[in-house]
Amino acid sequence: MAKKKFVVGCFNDEAVLFPAVKKVRTSGYKIQDVYTPFPVHGLDHALGMRETSLHTAGFIYGITGTTTALSCISWIFTKDWPLNIGGKPNFALPAWIPITFELTVLFAAVGMVLTFCYLCQLAPFVKKHHFHARATDDLFVMVIECTDKTNTEELTAFLSANGAVETDVQFVEEGWWIGRYDKDEMPFENKQIAAA
Image (cartoon, rainbow, N blue to C red; front, side):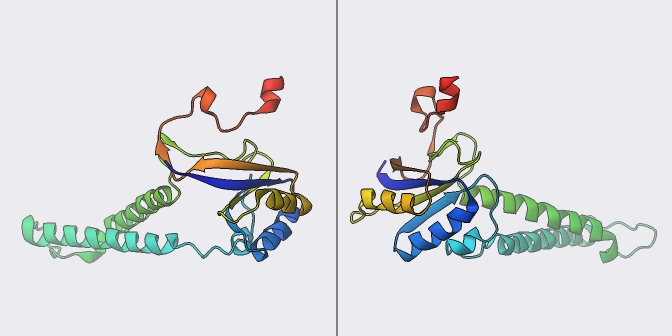
């Protein structure tokens, strides 16, 4: 697989992270992602990310569930197996509302979860690169993609000047791959555990 070069900057506080994100973007660097230990309000706008289309996908999945429920129930009760239940008409729409609602919710929920997992490349046995061990603990990790023209020494100095407590240059395989991490393949080393 092809490898890409990234400069990684770690920040202690979101108050320092926001101005650094703005300065990095105005300097013309491409921020791949920012990994935070908790959701940070407004970070997606600071990164210039567009609004997610997941709610649109959820609506489409829900309408698909509604259509599936109504078409199946109406076909079963009017054409395939019509029953006379207490003189009720075969096309009894009010009686079908609970099943229609449940299939709408089921299709929307399962479809949105699968779409989210696909977009985020999450699945069992999928191996992805971790840029820093403390990215989900207490550090805000900014990952900047390098091009052929990127001066990594200048970029790491720029990040340090804008509040980064730690900087690093990493070469990462593109995308995701099937596999698992063995102890000798771990992309990072937790020095606190090793020291203890």
